[in-house]
Amino acid sequence: MRIDIITIFPEFFSVLDVSLVGKARQSGLIDLRVHNLRDHTHDRHHSVDDTPYGGGAGMVMKPEPWGDAIDAILSDVQDVPAATDAAPLLIFPSPAGELFTQAMARELAGESNLIFGCGRYEGIDQRVFDHFAVEGRVRLVSLGDYVLNGGEVAVMAMIEAVGRLIPGVVGNPESLVEESHEDGLLEYPSYTKPSAWRGLDVPPVLLSGNHGAIAAWRREQQLERTARVRPDLLPPAN
Ligand code: ADE
Image 1 (cartoon, helix red, strand yellow):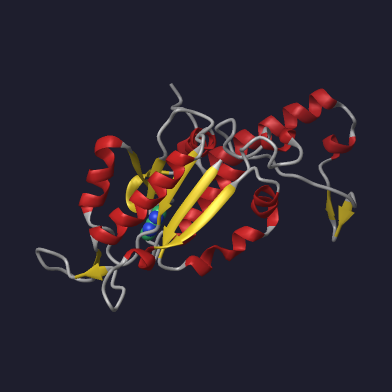
Image 2 (image 1 turned 90 degrees about the horizontal axis):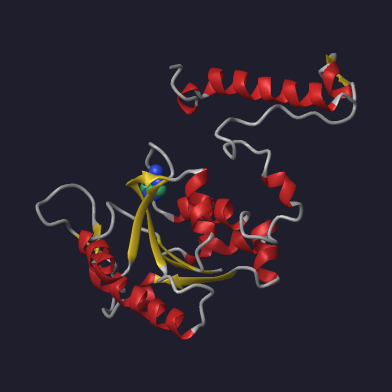
């Protein structure tokens, strides 16, 4: 998968050199490129923002640098043979976007080209989304109902969630199956050795060797935990 990121803070993404995503980059499973939006400005001050039409607090990101930065990536991507015919998908993290979920992470893991645009300030001029949605694919995506200072942290979270679903990135694919959200429920609690620690014992069923009983206990724990912590994830009672 090729991933392009446009940002005014390229240094944010140096952490993507480490851990599983870092390894996936080294092995070529993920081709990740970070672009500085300011490289696509044409004024002396490399300005990327201006005051909002209609007034209001804060600054809005100007459309021209975004247009030029995205055009440059699109023409570069089109020179590279893609695994599928699908056009690159443009993703803009935004608190006004659709909610990012495990299901969306799965969907995105099937793409061959993702382009992430990290907005700052009060957001990006709406025409950038409208323009690229005419011939391409654009999604505004929110990490949750809270406000970050910019899209960088959200993009990092999305890349980690998507990257680990790309075949070959996680060493043991079985570890992807029994996770929170994969079956719509939260994960069951996990234990390792020692069996007793600071007066707390591992639930005896896990030491029983009875695989049926262990599976039933884990399922029960998932349901109990989901009902207690995230009842919104359970289907309605009737
Ligand atoms: N940018 C600012 N807040 C955000 C959020 N909650 N999700 C995604 N991107 C954001």
